[in-house]
Length: 414
Ligand SMILES: [Zn+2]
Ligand SMILES: [Zn+2]
Image (cartoon, rainbow, N blue to C red; front, side, top):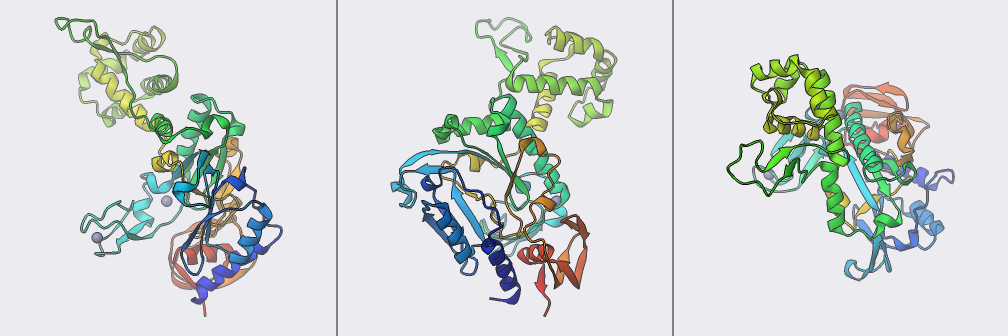
C-alpha cells in the first residue's frame, strides 16, 4: 500500500483502538446485519451478526474497515443469505445528500469521468454516461459550506414535515451528519417498523410532493356549464400540503415584486399590475374568506402556477431510494467515512442550524503532517480556514491531511 493510504489507515487504526472513542450501540443490534468495507482489500464484508457490542468493537479494532454499515432492517437471522434472513421490520430512514441537490457550487468543485469511455464533466454525476451508456464513473467531489447549507435546508424542511404533518416527536427523530456532505434522519419506533416498501413509497411521495391534487373534483356537473363552474375548482384546505401551500402562497403574494412574479412564469403584465394593486383585497378574499375563483381575472391556472412554484420550494430533496429500500445498509453512527475521515455523528434535531459538522465531526484532533497537495479549494476544519492549495507542499493538521488524501487531492510528503 502506498504511503499516503498507509498513513490514513494508521489514523483510522488509532481511532478504532482508542478506548475513549465513542461508538454508540445501535438498538436491537443482534437483529441487524452488519457490513464493512475492507480498507486495503477494498471488498465489502456482509451478513455479519454481532450478539454483543463488545465483539463488534473488537472487530473494528482488529479489522479497521474504511466504512462501516448496519441494516435499517431487523432480521430473525441477520447473518443468513438475503432470502433466508427472515425480515422482521425496519427503521424509517432518510438520506439528504448534496449529491442530489442542484447547488451552484457543484459545477465548481465536482468532477466526474466515465470509466469506460473517458467522457468527463463538472457538476452532478449523471446516472448513465451520455456517450457510451456506462454507469461507472470516477468522481472527485468536495463538500463546501454551501453544500452543507443546502443539505441542511432540505433537512429542515423534512424535519418540519415529519414533526408537524406526520406527528413524530423531536425525540423520535434521530438526526445525524453523514460524515461527508449530508444528513441522515432515522426513526426507530414500532409505528414505522412494519411498514412495507409501498407504504414507505407513500411517505416519500408526500415528502417530495408527488400526487398532490389541488383541484376539488366535482363529478356531478354537466358539460354545458362555464369553465369555472365545471369539473374542478382551485381551493386549499387547512392541513398537510394544502396548508403548506396556503402559507407559502400567502407569504409570496404579500411580498412579491413584479419581477418575482415574472421569475416564476407569469406573462400577463396587465393582469399582474392588477394583482399587485389589489393584493390586500385578494389576500383577504382568498386566504381569509376562502373565495379563490374569478376575482380580478385570476384563473385556476394562475393559482396552479403559483402553487407549483411554492411546492417545488417546499419539498425536501431526499434520496428517495434509501427510504423505500427495506433492506438498506446505512453508515453506522460514530464510525468514520472513508472519503473524508469525518465521523457520522448524531445531534439533537433542534440544533440543526447551529451544529457545525466541520468542527463536531472531526475525528483526528492532534498532530500535523507535511503533505503535497495537488489541488484543493479553500476549506474549514476544526475552526481553521485552510487553502486554497495548488501543487504545493504544506504542513496541515492531521484531520485536514486525511481528508485531502481520502479525496485523492494530496499525498504524504516524502
Ligand atoms: Zn462513457
Ligand atoms: Zn459545495
